[in-house]
Image (cartoon, rainbow, N blue to C red; front, side, top):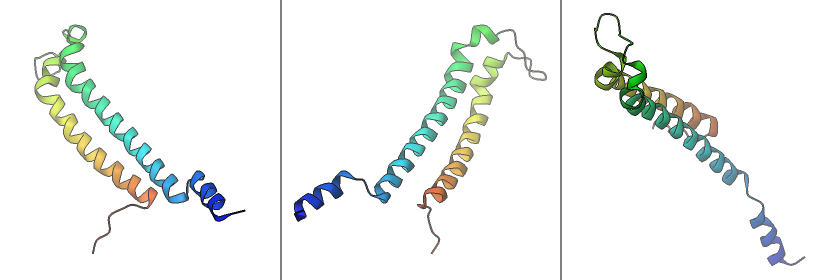
Length: 104
């Protein structure tokens, strides 16, 4: 077997680091997709698209329907919660795949 055949065989089989990087990237993209779907549902869905369905649902103490509340207040709370969730989950994902940031 010549050395060119060996190098061809090695290039066909992904090494462990490449496979780990690919898995990490897929997990990262899944997390981004999840956060974006929640963001879209809260900002566009609850405040605009589903407003006709929720127009009679009134939040106690606010005297406004839930779609109006989500458009003006609730979406901000959810966005802040998403930021903290994303940071926490990505930190956990980084440690899982061994790409966490180290303090020097």
